[in-house]
Image (cartoon, rainbow, N blue to C red; front, side, top):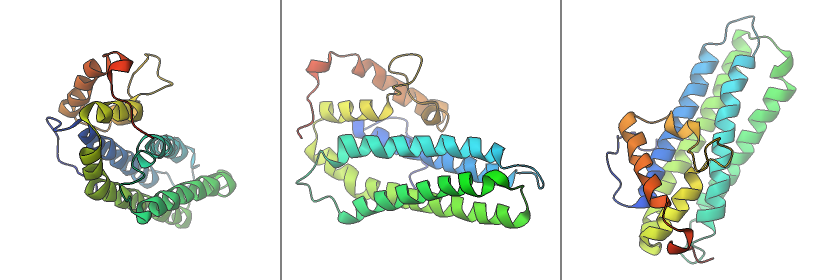
Length: 206
């Protein structure tokens, strides 16, 4: 699974990715707990709220990674397995969303459907964490090698900025709520560095 060790400092800006991965793991954990807490005979709506939060967080993160990381290192021999893993994860995510809308939306919670849903959630969680571990082992070292610190900072700014937040530049709630107070402070310390003029930060070379 992605790192669960509390980080008290970042050795490089891109190391903030470990905390994003930890937050995604926490989101998946909350979704499984939501399945376990469904009352028999009730509806699946309480689970759907938790799942859609995870789905939005995961989908947004993968989109930002594809835009600002995957295409940034075309010559760094990113493993084809990594791209295949991202596609598989998105397919599983979409399949689960379809299952919720087409099947569970008109059902009540019974032991069988609860087990089936739990199995789908755990399968998606495993694929997510496998992909995040792969990134930590193979992609992040390449980024440290090929990106300057200012470029890493700009990349993390894109991955951590919530475009829909009420306060411009705010971090998504799913990130901050998935971390300890100390880890939130580590990320908050990056805000001051983002305040530097945009033109002063090296831009990724496409």
